[in-house]
Length: 265
Ligand SMILES: [Mg+2]
Image 1: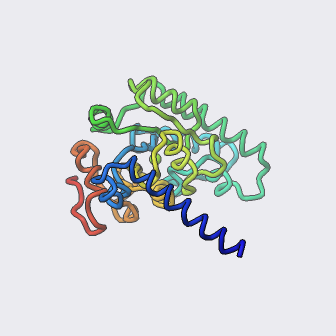
Image 2 (image 1 turned 120 degrees about the horizontal axis):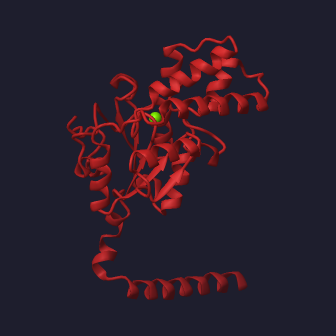
């Protein structure tokens, strides 16, 4: 009997609550509640190396120098395959999994010092980056930088490229325990922006980065700055340059089923 009373009372309480709830929500919104929970375009998460700044050549120089000092080879192919991954993963893939953590750290620090020395004063933005960032700001779209790079590299790029203060949120390599293709970095950026992952677009150039974006449940626009189109097919859309990408193209990723038209490239 007590059990039945309990059920009855819970039912009444639930009904009262739902009435109170209904009173607070306008009828039109209630009717469209299902529509309102659909994905919508709220934020863009930018990768840095190979998307914002043309840094590839200086990273390659850095790796050649530090691996060369240790008698190890690092081919252009190794470089392309590893681009976008965090340093610890790259170092282990070249030196071997048995390498001590301190040695990984030492090589990474050395490499980034060489990178910044070579890159300082020589960096350039990829075409269309500044224009797209400015348009996104005009439309009130939130923007974050989510990079596997050390914070010193991010500071070098943002300060020298006139991007200081452009990003509401910056997530860098060591803030997460796993680098791309793990989705951790993108998920942390979305959380800091207070945006649902499914309402974010990631802009990436690397295979690991595209995988990370999709694992995070985000839309992904890939740009063929460092990888050919056929390696980036996991992305929702692939373009050859950001020059012609408009805010409407990114919003369009949310309005069409998977077989939608691609933004113009
Ligand atoms: Mg990249």
